[in-house]
Image 1 (spheres, helix red, strand yellow):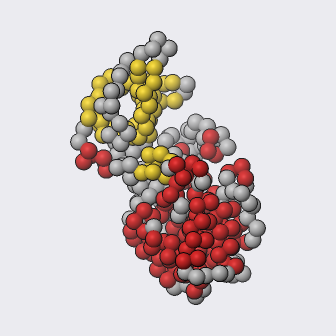
Image 2 (spheres, one colour):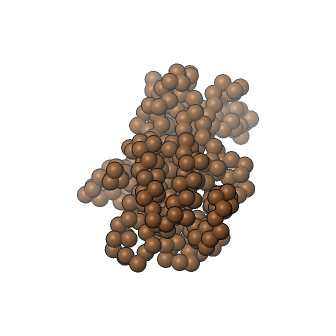
Amino acid sequence: MSFALIKELSEKKDKNGNGYLDLIVIGSDKKEYPAKIWRFDNNGEFAQNDVIEIDYTVDNYKGKTQLTITSIKKAPDEMIKEFVPSSQHDGKAVFASLLSKVNCFNDEILKKIVSAIMLNLRSELEVYPAAYRLHHAIVGGLMLHTASIVEMAERICEVYPNVNRELLLSGAILHDVAKTFEMETGKSGLCSSYSVGGELIGHLVKGAMFVEETAKKLGIDDERVILLEHMILSHHGVPEFGSPVYPMFLEAEILSTLDSLDAKIYEINNAASGVNPGEFTDRQWALDNRKLFNHGLSSTEHIVNLGE
């Protein structure tokens, strides 16, 4: 018997009308696996985020590993933390470090807006994942992704001193704060679904709305409000990926590039960690449907030095 966590669960019927469960489970190695339970009527017994004890066989379906579960029963909910992938950095500590940077800003307008939004969303920002399926879809992933971009932004400002450091860091810290609006999290702490507002509005638009609403509450009427809104709206780079506008000034372009780079580094590390040195991964649809090669010359573990 083995233990696992149900990340996704769908009740379906096969071509003969028999019920079965189509699952994605997280194993004790904290990796995700597709799974099936054939000829099974759930009747509400099992649900998303349940910890389960299972017997299974390992199959190969269209070149990918799939589990066929032959027996299943519930396990204690207290075991859930054993199966949830989490950031190696404590979200509370990362948040405090970022807030400390903001509190040292010389630009009082940026300081007031960014700190107000951070403090208003503090409890969510400290623990939220950064995505549903893709990069940093782990507990604390939002702060890890944000802080990684901030660290890279700091280095860029050392190389290019003409960059407005405080504007760039402000955009980096705020670019994904509305993920807390866009996604729902279950008892596992991972994203369980998108909210209605997340589907209808999304985190780019809502993030810009947070900036506008906060500025109005603080009585701030300044062009920097528009600059921050633009950085949030344009950080996906192109309309194909959801940005209504392209980045139109230097700090916006840097933010968009760093956001894409950090996501790709995470995705490449994650994919390569699933194969042995000298092997190729399956095609990764989030990375232009490329196969990736694990050359074995460096660790594929996603390790981030946040300079804390």
